[in-house]
Each structure stands twice: as structure tokens, then as C-alpha cells.
Length: 91
Image 1 (cartoon, rainbow, N blue to C red):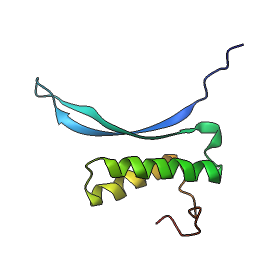
Image 2: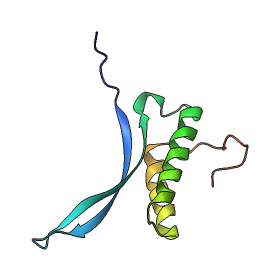
Image 3: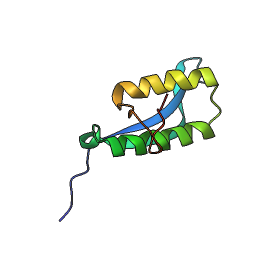
Image 4: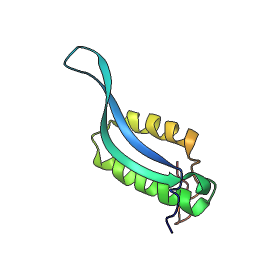
């Protein structure tokens, strides 16, 4: 029996570029993380999502001021957990 795929949020980073025709378009730069929609309010899953997203974001060439904007945009879709596993706050 085949399981139905779960709906989830895939976080990817894209940049606006100008294509060969001179039209603005989005180019995928990198994958950040994924979370299943039915687990958005699970603190453990939120920590895992944000941990993966931050590790992958750190691997990309992103300016520090852009990181805050990207995280704010992600936080509108995936709640940021109140604390990291070590007890410190995320922000």
C-alpha cells in the first residue's frame, strides 16, 4: 500500500537575476530545510528545521544583514522555537 505524500514546507534560497532576454527571474541558490505541515507546531521538529536551515544558510554566500531578513521571512511560515536544545535562545 502506497502512502500519500505529506504536505510540507521546503525552504530554498533564490536570488533575482536578469536572464539572457533581459527579464528578471529567480534563480535557486540553495536548499535550506524542509518541515511537514502537520508538524509545524512541534517544538522538537521546529528546532530540527531551524538547525538544518541555519547550517545550510551558513554554507551559502549570504551577507550577514541578509541572513536576518531570510530568517524573518522563514519565521512567518515556520515558527521559531523559543529555545535551542542547550537552553540558549535562538535570537
